[in-house]
Image 1 (spheres, rainbow, N blue to C red):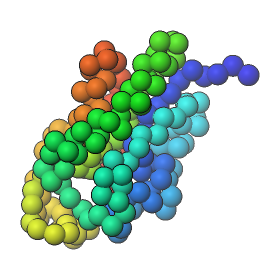
Image 2: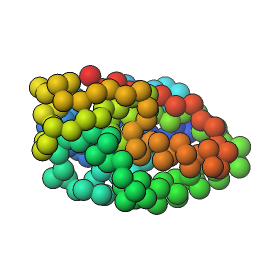
Image 3: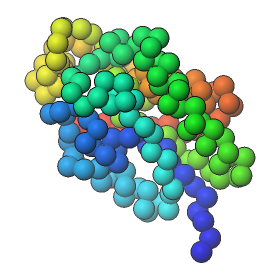
Image 4: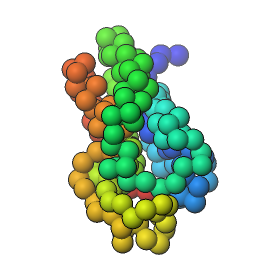
Length: 166
């Protein structure tokens, strides 16, 4: 059977909601609409690692972009993403099509079109008080910002889109 030679790059939690902070999940295991797209369009998958788990673990709480936007976290993201970028470059060198990068809009790490900034102190109650203590900014989250910078450094162009989870 011939390969499709088409690949999509997905934020980690689109395939594994268990990586999200406790209390923040809008689907039980994976994002069904994204998986439907993968199957219907015959796409291979590159699942990005979850930078928040590897940096703060599972007992982390809801934070905003400005709380992650520090050199140590950005370096952590960069190191995690280097092998992913190398993989994408190699696929493209072999004439595979990396058709899209899909992130999670609103995420402090994996937002594509927007994220949230602000600080109240302690846990942000994502369901009840997020809008009361944060400001939406139309820019990528930290992880995606670093990823897009690395892709640009390697002259990789890719369509980007963000899933609005609500």
